Length: 358
Image (cartoon, rainbow, N blue to C red; front, side):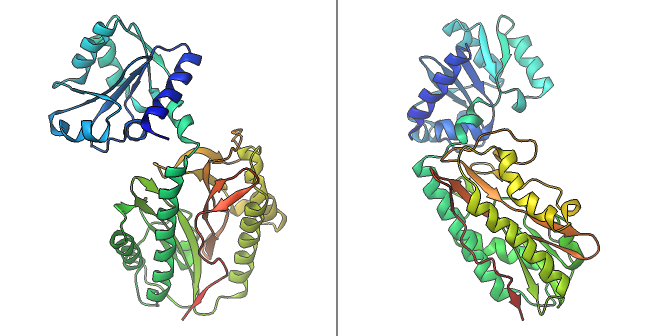
């Protein structure tokens, strides 16, 4: 889907909501609609115009990356430039992304564009972003492939005596060398009792034999994110380690087998949660089964007990059940998938059998 097609899809949504224009301040939504990757910019979409505003630094880059948009170089205050455009276009009612504007910013817009009515209209572009096109899925597959290669590499690197921070650095270096702009998020490496921390970012704790090492990481590649979690054992795991690993694996595999379009996020979440509950560990699985990902590491839809969003082909989500036992350790197993016409397809392909290293 070209940026022109995305603008047309947006205009259809605006028409259904009775909006003549949408002011876009989210950097991610700006990139999605325009293709512009600069650090600063705003977008105004009306029924007959698509405008990209940025400053003098992007005089060349913006028109090159966003040929479907007219480029407007704004002055020191974007509100002054927008006021001029709104007057020229006779815009008296503009939708805005209320989740991406502070109270202070909103006040400034109201003061500068006094004749304009500002209508909260967040979530419209995010709704379009939920369905990935083939070009997006191609990039996301490449990002997932890079994360898979990073996992295989780190398994040859892991050993007792390393710190969690050293492991995280090695993962990130490998992904950067493989073409990633950065990690998708702050890399999680949590070992031993710290593996019970769902978001235990890497610390200076030293890895030891006989314990779990949980690694949650991803590659930010050509603007898109991958997100994978694998839990491995250094040396021989104990009986309890094997027990909770087997339960999480069963839950995750069941979800991958049964998830399909037409389900709600709540129903998809139950695929893993019900299994973990059956084994008596429901109190130790406190987060959702998964989340959408794409240009952002966390985006719609959610696979959680509170989600009524209906899954559709083209949506990309994670499936990541876990069990976290305080003062002992925890397991999470996570894959990225795309919803298909009949079920799902995995983007991440790394082995999930319990790997014992050393």
